[in-house]
Length: 285
Image 1 (cartoon, rainbow, N blue to C red):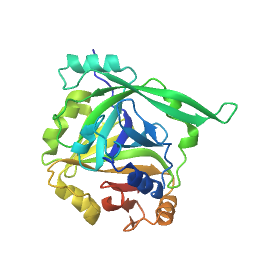
Image 2 (image 1 turned 30 degrees about the vertical axis):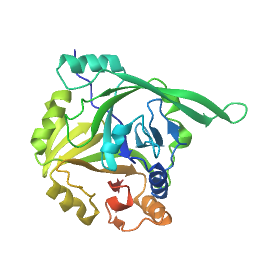
Image 3 (image 1 turned 90 degrees about the vertical axis):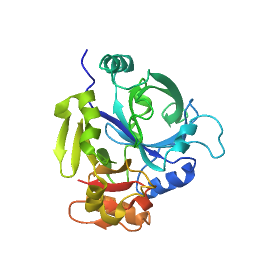
């Protein structure tokens, strides 16, 4: 049985129990967010939909005592990197046969309102099944696969237009003291050809995107004072690069959103992590 091909489904910003603030920040960053959704597992979310992938803000309600309480055990910021799966049962079987550390699939739903119908609004239940890496395998966050049964309720064109021009996730940044050791897991998952050397670490090719696994000095050399707070963590998910149709458009959206400390040159626009819920953001063309 062949292993799954690495494709990016979405990336996740953990808002812990402060969704109102996270949603306000990401709207001011120039993202169009979907209406707040509520998972049958007890979490809530907003999405920023792109061409074939998306950004998810996830949280639990303030004062919650049941549901996705595990989100409160993680720091705020980038916390989840999610691969795509066309068939979660096949994905899990392949991973299990290769003795890779994943739990069996879990299915859940989320009600969705969308444009259409005689009164202008329709509703439906988005249905998903996830295959999650076992807890504690990686120290920097959550890694899993997502199988969408109702893609037509998630990738809708009315949600794909963003003031900052974003059309895709280009890169995720992971800090690890030993990038080579950390990258071995992905080589086992996707084959050695998917992992390549980069300055200060390794990169994992994930469809049209990539995950850079680098040391903390390498991250700081690239992003300076814009890096997130480590909060005592030696390994953590640090930030995201977004593909935009125009750096000028991204910069104008950030200015309109009153985002402070933005750094721009001819190749990129960088938002400090303290302005983006503890995840450094980069816009590139």
